[in-house]
Image (cartoon, one colour):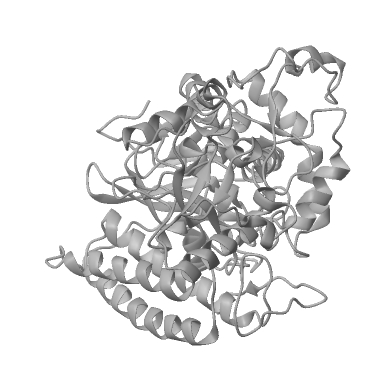
Length: 548
């Protein structure tokens, strides 16, 4: 159980950095065979999973098919999805939902949903009542959800299971600093053997030996001024993996969720895509609908198209927001299907059964990340990356709604199977050098951290946002180069804190985003540039390789 006085064991079979859906799934799937430690730099729930509203995309209905889900994903990904990965993950979607039901996740059901499902006779009765909704880019109703708080329901069910398992240790207030790698004497590939961790309770950095390490730290949307993500989404896992020598890919594809609540006192509150799936309409301030002018699918077009349409109309009209209108639906229907959004908006004086919801796009999901295979394996032996931290090839140039949670479960399943297979033949490192802070001092100027953090997020929003051009990107490149030098100088001279560790990581992932964006000489999916508005006939991933 987590506590304010954290005691960190100096070794564990599997060390998982991150306590969201991916991390907890990997922990539970591995814990019958290994000692597992899960680290969270804040409270366990302060990851993106807890705040996810929409749901999990899965093929459960006879009217749907794996082939249809695969094709929808490929279309949304604009030619960059890896078909074999898409097929692998989609084909395991029913198994993932079945496992979640077995863990006790309270998904929304409906008495009307009694059709036989494609998940096998053994579990058909149990799953036949699940309510399916539709979201942008999907050609069928295939989104399993727990009203409009799916992430919270999933997280709480998995947390209860993890807390009850004798082989799982959950630790809060522990910030990973860097991975520890070693090269065997025979000169073969490098191996990850542990992690340096800042224990926030003691304010000391401790070395933890682990036979396997998994990065499940989420994405990097806090690189932007406006985001739907919690404060911890600073790209920690991506940055640590890059520093350790892993490739990263497609960091230019930052998904902006089209509909974030626009209100001065509403911090990062997302308005789920499921509203549009149930008929909510996007409108200009004067009540005119506009999506038909941008895409024949209107409100159900993929997120990149909807976000650019909103951005275009806001800039064209000089307005602060557009509006999402579901007032034409029965009030009871709205309150029943979207209780979280209804109650939250009501706190700001917006009754969504009778009032339009003011919305703006906000940075939401990092489609790129650490290069992995279908089992979450990275370029470094015994190091895994799962969830939003990893780049599996599923999302391509634009993630389709509700495929992200699905990826968390399926890749975590594969990672667990890989780890269990290797356990018997993987030894602990003989030793890890202790953390050395003999030549650093306490900071006397923390304002530098907050100032640089703010500057990065502002110029990323202005110069590396929804619509880009070379002038803006080159300006961002010059700024990030200077800022990274300042951040590095500050880091090597002062004792580490959670804030300066996050700033160090954020500056690095912002640099990777800018480098990827500058190298792509076309517009594709989430990367739209005014200087190259065409889309190449054949798409290619942007893969960056560390110099070391």
